[in-house]
Length: 99
Ligand SMILES: [Zn+2]
Image 1 (cartoon, protein in one colour):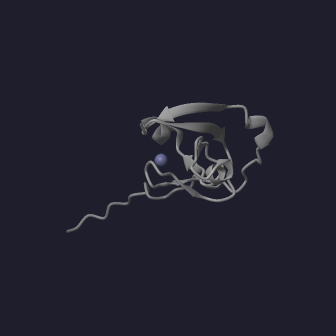
Image 2 (image 1 turned 30 degrees about the vertical axis):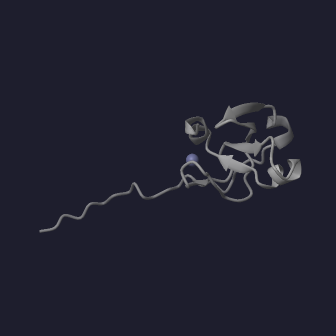
Image 3 (image 1 turned 30 degrees about the horizontal axis):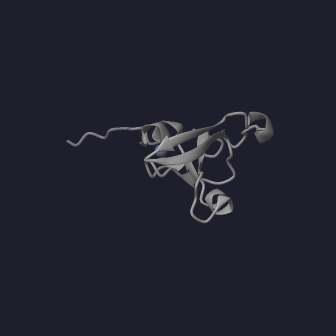
């Protein structure tokens, strides 16, 4: 007789619709430069969260309101605006692993 395994692990109730809006200006304290693969990046810590971002490190999404690192390449070929337009959002742990 096959056994039914009642697995509740797939239930994800992490998403909380009553998230308190965060004043980005106040939180926006952390900003630093890191060099990876011979390139300089400006990294800032953010809780930006109006849409889901895909982390380039693991290809998983960054949840709304979740802490992430915004990474901007410093010496972008097309200049600063292009670098800002192409900024990526990373999970902090994935960014640390990226080297
Ligand atoms: Zn990730």
